[in-house]
Length: 271
Length: 291
Picture (cartoon, rainbow over the protein chains, first blue to last red):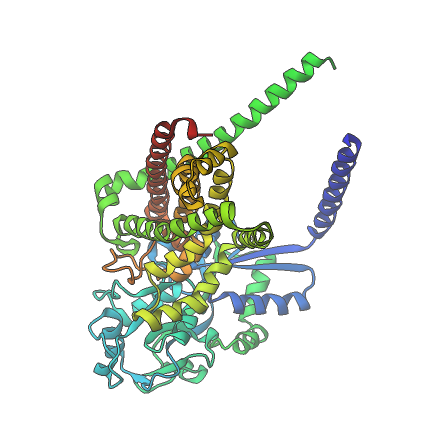
């Protein structure tokens, strides 16, 4: 019995050593760690995949975690590139370099059975602040409005509040908090009285898009600036980027990289 | 190796493992306090614990609504799970034929083994729309969360209570039946009272899981920081608060989340003390019944 255990332990040790060996051989690759905003994640992943195809010597690892995590980890040099879907506060900036890789729209979504499809920015503000509490005030059926928001700290929430709510108005305190774009979408899809905001990248036919001042969000309306709810997608580095990181960011900003950005429904940077 | 040295090493080895668990808990508590105390100091203890407003972007860190949220969800789920679980345990231990037990026990074990995220997803897809249709509102509520928790803690309460009921010596039952009591009278007046300490243990364990549950609650409770006006209002639990904002928190906000953890630890300690006190009290009054 004892011998058996010993043998088992030995085999496990050998496997671990073997695994370690294979991982070690990979370290001859250049490794770039990217983490941050979950909104930027799909684009960053697509960019990374395409880049690794062209430059197999580079290994790029993309993670989510939120804009705050991206900003914090990159300023602590835990990762090479942090991603953010909101503009940095002055106290967050420090020695961080910002590279806007694209712009993105925030879409106001309602349930597919909701008859309304157009709101003014003022109406939107009143709905989210709780001044308008019933759909009949907006010409809809007599039903309470269920406001769905993201959690405090989310880049999407920050961007929405900066652009719609302004400095002095707060989102109503009894709004349902969901922790990801997908769960906001799911809630809106299920609840006929719900309204929420999601990023354009995640938009699908499960929910209905609300026009803002008569303009529906699309690549064109975001490029020409007529759709107002838009925000930057940023790569952040701590200080001037060097070597592989610099090459990657340069590639992302090149026409080749921007093509991928467009494919992901993100608005390219106009240069 | 002589018998004496072998004994010595086994003894010390066991001591070491026992101590290591204490050391680990100690280190975790020290770390949480080290990270959390600065927030409580700078924001003020009373403002923190009894503050009604949690909005980190404006520097407001009051956790009182979340304490109420956590307590409310936990108590509501215990209210549903304890009677259900106890009756189920009595059925399994005393009434159910062996064949039925063979089916029910593995089913309950499976229920206990399902990961909480699956419960949460189930709740989000099925229970939330159901609650919205039945009780109005958004469907995200303290009640929805408690229903999910009830299913999650039920297996713990059933299996531990069942063991307690089963470990009552056969002589008790035989003596009661011999005195002319019916089966139900025997269960009600002899077996159940004698098993109460074990039943309380099962409730403590269930409560521990309910207070600590995070993911499933995030998905169905709505996470609104408010004192609920009714059980159909959305709430946020202390655990959810940490998990939701962890990724974004910097500076004092980060410390405030650890301070939330401190509050959670104290809440669990208080609940444990109350439960252990009941346990101890029942143990004395039942006398020889405790096993």
